[in-house]
Length: 473
Ligand code: SF4
Image 1 (cartoon, rainbow, N blue to C red):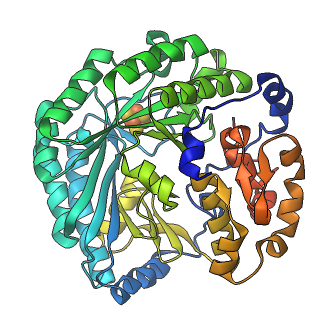
Image 2: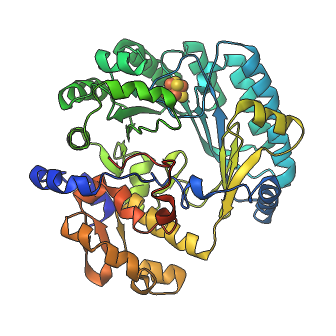
């Protein structure tokens, strides 16, 4: 059975069994948008190392490039949010940011020595539509003037329906943006009040209709499960409304309670955060609803219509994960601009200063704002591949591993495979012909727990005084 077929199959979970084994898997663990994960990266990889890696882009000048732009501004703080954002109404901050981005793009372009064609441009935040239409145009020109868009490039943007105007949507469409992702989170009024994000269904519907009329061919929603006061019943009502608006893609993220990063989340501890078993039920109900409505379960936390490129990439085995979630751009170098942005170049990760002022100071002086990174070694590459296979395909073929890395999978990962024995007994994974390792439905829900068994850095990260990761459920 291919991964795509598996994803469209009915999603059955034995609740009595799930409840019995769940306590063994509620642990702190990474989401694996990278391997090694960000806490492993360090300052030994700084601006000089990033400059060297940028220079390597010229070795393959015709290869496509993926570009991410982080726009950190928001008008008000959503209390669940652990993103890197600056809450402001001051117009001077975005104006300064735009000057600094133009400078950063210039520096990166000169270090790269080549204007690789951009096959994917994504703006995230923060709230990119915090920028006025003229500022959106300016930002777009700064980036695409240095790194021109390839024919058929995919341009996508994250927006907040509460602050996005028809003029902004028309400006984005005129520039060539075709994918728009709306922050929704939850439509329940009680939940919305608790998370400090009140957003009506009508507001969201109006933006969906406006985006489609302007020519956006893909509308995605971001939802979160595990928020305060959420219940299976309240989520069903939210899903009724979501399905009524017929998004092309849905990301249903697990709420990450990370109070050491997002202090305002402490307020939720007085509220009714759903317990792990309730969270899992909400997720399974949602998966069933999306499958019944004709969506493909792309994996982990993503759903897409069957004709969506994500579903096609899942079927073709070319789906990948990166900092933007799931992507169809397998193996494409990624350059990030803006505070906290992450780049992923020929086997290295580089992250810019998180704080707006520090990032601005670094780029305005003509430098790169890199504060930490990591160059993958041979072992990292193998483990990154294994983890990506499990999270993107839900299965791993040892023969494919052997063909790629020239060694038997079972020998290289003997200890890790032995550590999976309890997970096999608990029904998370199964071994098949030729040693094939596959996630079962329960294992897809707890995919992080399976991936963690292949993370060589995790044992040293666990048990420290400072927590590093959110809970797996
Ligand atoms: S959830 Fe989005 S809009 Fe809300 S504070 Fe975070 S980045 Fe800003």
